[in-house]
Image 1 (cartoon, rainbow, N blue to C red):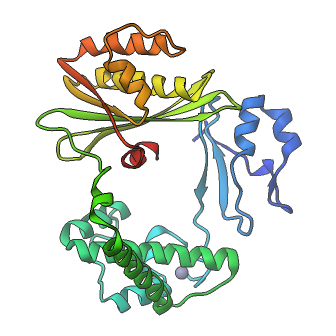
Image 2 (cartoon, helix red, strand yellow):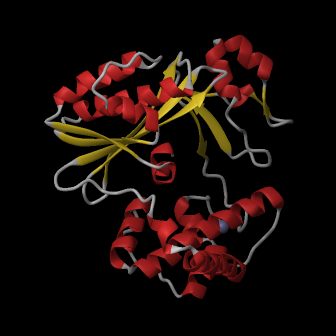
Image 3 (cartoon, rainbow, N blue to C red):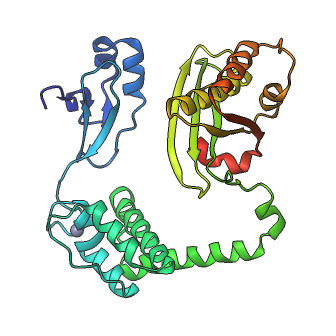
Amino acid sequence: MEDWRWTADLIDSNTRKWKTDLIINTFEEREAERILCIPLPLCSFEDFVVWNGEPTGEYSRIMGSANCRRCQTEAETREHLFRDCPVAKDTWERLAIAWPNLAANMDFSEVLKKIFEANSLGICRKFVCALWGIWTARNKFLHEGKMQTGSQIVDFFVKYMRELDGTKRFLPESSFHRNRWIAPSGSRLKINFDAAFNRQRKESCTGLIVRNGNSEVICSRSIINKNIPSAFAAEALACYQALELGVQLGLRDVEVEGDSQTVIRKLQEENEDRSEIATYIADSKKMTFLFISCVFLFQNREANEEAQK
Ligand SMILES: [Zn+2]
């Protein structure tokens, strides 16, 4: 733990805001910028900001184990918040869902995994919605001081689920299926790429997701790129990075799919590209020889939402 530093003293405990001057004077400009970008909780101070001391390290907020604000009886662990707190208990009882009796020291995520394995899709759906409802109610209490009962939580998401089912019924079949992501066939893998571009900072973020014929995610990655001149270049670079990832993973037969029609077309064309993205296109074309087969596909934006996340 010695690499970790508590940085709570970078926060003004009265205003609950970052001590901007201190941060700017202590850290390099980029570091300071990143710290100041971290949102701080306004009405509770149970979160501590920790920093692993590395210049490239990520900053994050971790939840302390202060007592549950609603019942004040126990530390607010995940088990308490979602299962043992009276409001949570009330919610589960109303849904007639019982948590399995598992070893007390079992990891919370393992418990969830067991529940999902043992139940039908319908129950799992209800279960997830209840977790969401309990979490939302907790935040409502913390930030707005509104206390919800178990039955209010259940009402809230049952109504939501009904609306969702209603929407689905009214969506025309064709628009629902036209742009859907299509799994690659056989032993092929598909890499979807996408890019977000920040013009001011000249930065892009590439999103990559590799899936197999069963639509299972094999790998996903996001990469921040600096000194990117345009959104167009960001897309072309994202495509190159998709191929790079494919090579790194040792893939042999791949489909590389993106929502930039121009980039995909340039890659499919035989002739040499002379646009601003010529280098990326040429490099990407060279990279395709490292696969047994590699095809480029254009995909409509909607189906790519997952790669953007
Ligand atoms: Zn509680």
